[in-house]
Image (cartoon, rainbow, N blue to C red; front, side):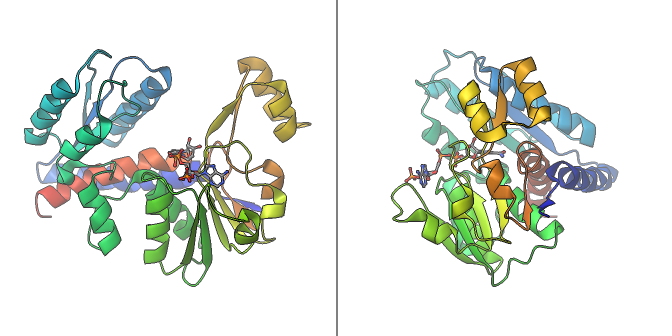
Amino acid sequence: MSKVLDGTAIAAAIKQEVAEEVRTLAAKGIRPGLAAVLVGSVPASEIYVRSKVQTCADLGLFSDRITPPDTVTTEEMLDLVAALNARDDIDGILIQLPLPKQVDAKVLLDAIDPAKDVDGFHPVNAGRLQAGRPALAPCTPAGVIEILKRSQIPISGAHAVVVGRSDIVGKPAAMLLLHENATVTICHSKTRDLPSITRQADILVAAIGRPGFITPEMVKPGATIIDVGINRITTREEFDRFFAGNEKREATFAKRGSTIVGDVHPKAFELASAYTPVPGGVGPLTIAMLMANTVRAAKMRRGL
Ligand code: NDP
């Protein structure tokens, strides 16, 4: 039987720890603050930002939701970032992606004070992470490590195969696993004979962005599978490919006309010793780690 790694429960434990730290800081007159910048009206982004702001309130952090119009220019956004960099009540700056086409996201993310870069996307934090110095690590990969550690899955000496090399998930996940003494292989779209490599994984991290891409033939029996992917499927054909006969999913699909599947085919989970489900696996960790990073940034900025 494969063990389900319950990301919702792990995230709840982390949030409780963050709330305790926030109370300790409050006794010293410090309230960590997060600026959440939401440009325009992308429905998914609105949901994410609402959830981040709500979690701040739940845990006792200050938050400021800033909503520039979708006609905003790069220059206007740079002015906003400069103002947030200078604000003493703001410890973390989050710019919800994606941004409208006319805004240069790279220039903007590079303008964030690395000390307030709670998403961990700034090249200075990426460099610090690589050099093994204290850094604000990207939230989703940091969440992957928390899941493994808190589930007592040995990382040291394990062969971890990460499929995906994006700057926000694949690359930093590989670096964090390396720091935990895994032997790490990074795969991508140009990797030759991918299944022969994924079949060697003791820990398989899928961050690809393609529904059900990792199939049972690609998994070593007994591996731990971490599925980072979040893909919405809307057609009956796709639904049947992944969830035929699954009554619970059928009900969601009938009600909403869509459901979420990860980058791993549900059949592949059956071979794993442990795996993160989608939804309810890695996803909930991302917000928990954002809160943890904001508190960490607040402490680091004050030399605590
Ligand atoms: P990107 O699109 O930036 O990167 C995808 C990576 O997958 C690329 O490195 C790409 O390779 C690789 N890839 C694509 N096709 C193949 C293939 N056929 N074989 C091998 N590798 C392939 O995606 P992200 O890293 O931003 O996100 C990955 C997934 O994680 C998405 O489903 C996303 O929704 C999800 N996600 C979930 C989060 C959460 O909170 N749980 C947070 C962030 C993302 P190449 O570089 O060669 O193009």
